[in-house]
Length: 200
Image 1: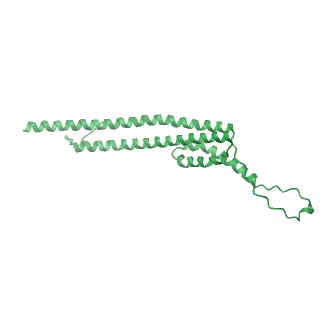
Image 2 (image 1 turned 135 degrees about the horizontal axis):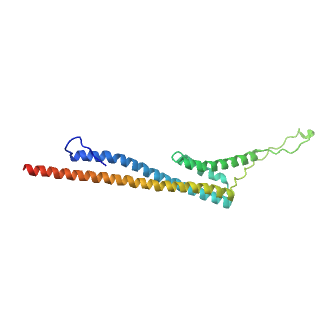
Image 3 (image 1 turned 120 degrees about the horizontal axis):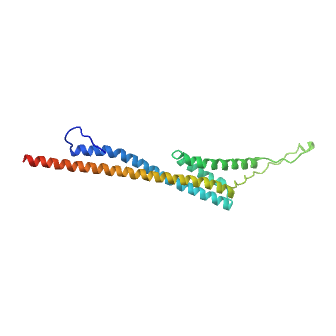
């Protein structure tokens, strides 16, 4: 880290200006890295929560349609910043949507009994509305989707480790800039005092 003055004399104001310029960019990078790390941690929590809900749905035979809102919310909230999260969750959401659509289509199907030609003049009663079957999630689904989610959580963890190394490096650069500025200001003060003493 170097500082190149435009004159032979560096005032404290000049040194402080240099330090402000130097550290501003580092602070910006550090802030971005920390924000991204926080968002990644929240995304990991969401992934683990979804995995847990999938396991519960498989174990308790609850309606898998109820998971779609969680998946859609996670993709909407974190998918842009972390495309890999969307890549992990979108296939799960697609499968649930397809199963739900199939069940809804089956519920809408009207089963008309066989009629002879002479019976066609009779009015058939309107069929009662049929509730679609719940979307089932098997243990195999839970294992398969859980493995995919675990893989992404692990990948996030590795990225977090690298991010922490970068944050530590930014912090080291900030400390170095401050120490350099402090040493230069101390040297400038001593030089100025020496000149004054020689004059007097």
